[in-house]
Amino acid sequence: MPKVPSLSSEQIETFSRDGVLRLDGLLRPGAIGPAREAVLGQLGRLGLWDGARWTLPQDGRRVKVAREIGHRHAAVEALIEEPSILALVDDLLESRAFDRAVYKRPQILFSLPDALAWSLPGGWHTDSPRLASGERLGVQVFTFLEPVEARGGGTVVVAGSHRLLNDGKSRVPREVNRALRQEAFFRPLYGQAGGAELPSGSVGEVPLRVVELTGQPGDVWVMDLRVLHAAAPNATDRPRVMVTHRFLRADLMDEVAAAYGWAVGALRDGAAVR
Image (cartoon, rainbow, N blue to C red; front, top):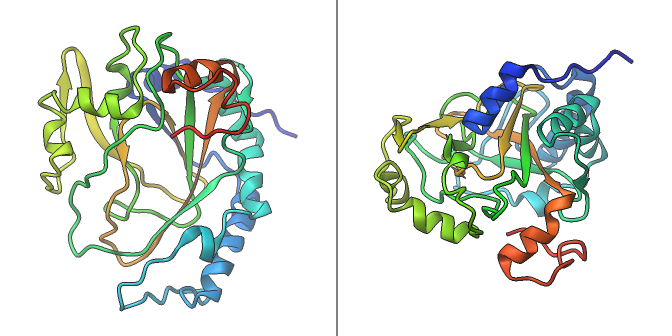
């Protein structure tokens, strides 16, 4: 088996600065192909895909991913065990073990076209508390089973936002939101001001910019779990079909439980990170 390359020092520096990093073609076609076939097969049974083209509903229906597509597909689960993904996670978690109890399998992200014009969404949030230790809890990996172009429903993230509020205090996500709302850069986002531009700016000396996660099958984005992000509208003529998975540091599970006020060991017993 060929050696899996490690991230370069420049890539690690970019990730530390931005909290997001794009890796083109990281997943091999032999891994993406079976996962794509498994998911598109389900969409075919729903009458949305005929093997060559999309047939989109005109009645405003939404696909219930968990029930109508399902997350339990062996070929999709195999993606997060790919050597290139495990090497990426190992680099960013600095070779620390990751937890396998909270997030047991990857999730499929699917959205039909749902907007005539694209605009910035509401619903901004983080998937991780700020820990008193200031440590990065983990990373989230995104990849594509179908091309996702600009304005095509790809998750939007605020690059650099993970560097804010690391001041020695534990903050759960709602407290992070409350604090960020006070900053001028974030007020339009939380106020759902709309607009089609991807804003950039800063808070103090931390540069910030909104980034849209787009790419081709096999491309990968990785995101620090502290990064503020939101689901975006799909203003194209094709669905978004993506896969995501979160990798949490096993050695920080007790600190996460403490941040939420749960009993020590609660996460090891199967509680979920909110």
